[in-house]
Image (cartoon, rainbow, N blue to C red; front, side):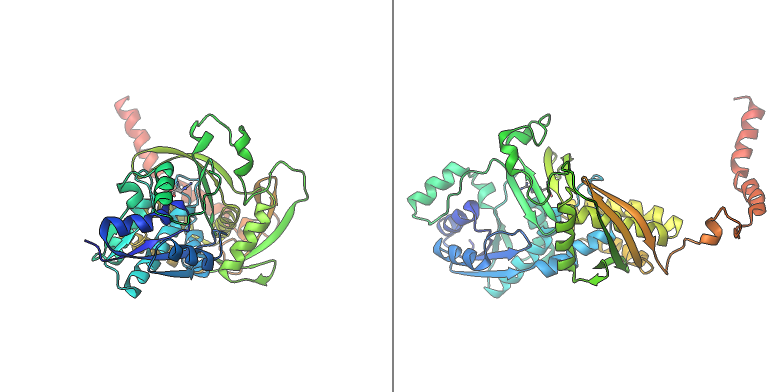
Length: 405
Ligand code: ARG
């Protein structure tokens, strides 16, 4: 039986009542752990006070935004990470970081057990528990919402009975997860996958990070500077990873960039509809890809596409800390040493358009590419090249003719 439990605490209804549940069910002391990953929620101090008011023995709150930007979002840019070609892994990227701090808090408070407030239908329960198993296999894990099949009504009744000072907000029709990298919105009328996101009175509350792309407004043109595959400056101004992502969220969000409406394949076998808004992630990845297309050698670039897809799937599938992910990182990192330079983009009407590239470490050679006078490409050698290159297909054609098939 657990003696001391560290609970990933958001300050919301689920995790607030979980404190008391865990205490009653196990007799353990509960330590609340809250993290800021850029969700723009309540101040951490308020969350800490609520945890204690709801019965936590102590609370540990930590601002992880800079770490999330540098060690999780930035690698996702290098990997051009888009699950199923569309989703920039907003929630999936934050779970290993939250798990890491949860484990650190467990050590600090000398806990033997961890707990999270996920339901039993999603990917996040898997991400937390698999991350924890990778980092601290000796720790047990509790999942009170999932394992007690809790519902909102049961939670509110329990809170009343036990005098837990929960703040009951008006019920949000959606389930939302948001952080620095973007926002994920599901449930409510979106569960009918024929319904457009703007087709219901509840639609008003859907988008927060992005403005309406259809409003007529001037184009925003900007230059992003990359160093070894990481964005380091916007319009010549150097910015730390956190500030840079915040700035891109603001500028791309103001142009309605980064809205995604998709049905995705969850790890647990369910297909689910999710709306995302990820203005910074979308535009940074588009810009990064444009620079890679100038700087990566052809086979390296082609091979990387497969690595990127696998990388995204691994992160989605709860394998951030896995050996295979580390091996893919080694490849990706090696590809980035010449990815330096400037990309000029235009943000407008929900679109990101690349309009210029500049690099001293690329493979684009004007003298080889040009159709003008100063062409240095030896066109006459192409004849011999094609003759040898096409040999295998000529041989196959000759056989076909010989055998008459
Ligand atoms: N479907 C996304 C993922 O698995 C987001 C999960 C959280 N979504 C939410 N709306 N609460 O990564």
